[in-house]
Length: 426
Image (cartoon, rainbow, N blue to C red; front, side):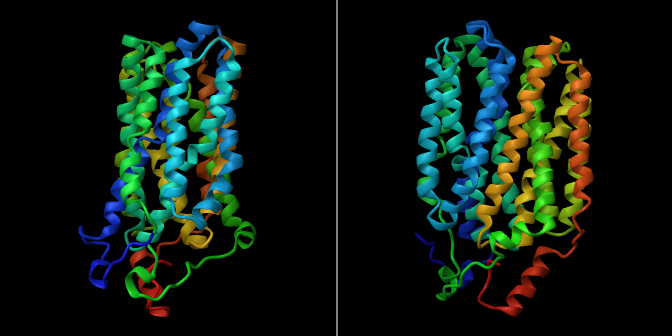
């Protein structure tokens, strides 16, 4: 279904522009998606599940790795579907399956195979619920304000990561971990109504009555470019560092002397600082070099990781979490922005899916490696986290291989419309 507009309502700077309603719905969907729920609450269940069933930390961490590997395999396929069909046909069933799978974890028994099977299902639909699915739609609605629009919907993940971990921790403490999984299942359904009502692609003919296909290079041509593989490498390294830390963050901090309440607060701080970082970076990458913005925020994330490796007080933990959130939270904005800028929108979702494959590979191995090191050493030694920081610094260094481009999006739009006055999208 396409949105019908007249030319006067096509100004992205206007609050009446229909794209902002789509962005609001996408914001809520991302806020209650896989992205803020699973990574940011996973570590809160480590101790309760170990106490209930005696499962080893490495074995529990393996379920997250399984979900990440599943995401790696299915993301390009989901991307193909998003490029071909209306987004709601992919997103709405994914939300329902995701919510039911989360709620089913309340019925876990001592057989860990059930836990693994459920996380496999979560991995199948993860990107059907998250920013991956909504970003494709946002690209059809925005060009001049694309960076800010992407940042806006991704702040939903930050808001979710502020609110969901404390609510989950409170539920675990007062009602048990089974009730907490039921709570998460209910939260996952909150994005369904607005997505059903508002989320849809906009096409060029919605404004000018003349259908123009989205432009962009082929998938094969993109895979032949160094820029794509640099972006994939940055994504994999960042995910390894971030997920290796975040999925164990609560237990790392409590082991180093931070209270459980403060550890949950640090998880929220990581998400909350990402909101500020994303909005600022989203505003700036429409005006300055997105490549150098990427380098800067990756450096911040690496510094935050290093600080968290030695955090033994609430203040230090919150500082490290804030830097980590500003850095890696904002990186989630820059990557799709650069993909669309380098390769166009025609096959964007497939290419974005392939970078999510890189993300899943890095994000899946990080928790397993840290869990393995914990099981061997019997504790989360600071040197383990320093290793994660080194990986994050490597991602920042690799980002320097991308040529700096200071052409503002507004100027780029003027050049495009001069070449083809009907094309507002690419």
